[in-house]
Image: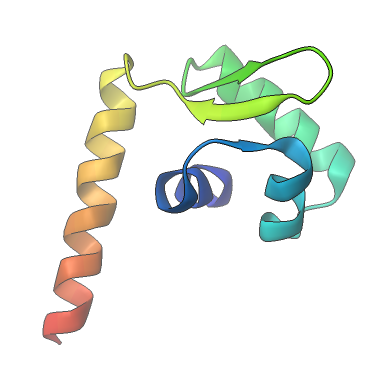
Length: 78
């Protein structure tokens, strides 16, 4: 969930930047990205500098984005 939240907040980014922002051990980050790819939640593109981006064609991603935006709005109301 942390990876998805970062991508929703910051947009597409290379794996190195995602690693720095997430503070997840690099090997674990790569495994989690593989799992997210298998679920079609993210896409990893490029050969040299791999870019990670959300898979907006997956309805679950759109639902998650809407949910997080709603939660953020409600956080400021409290």
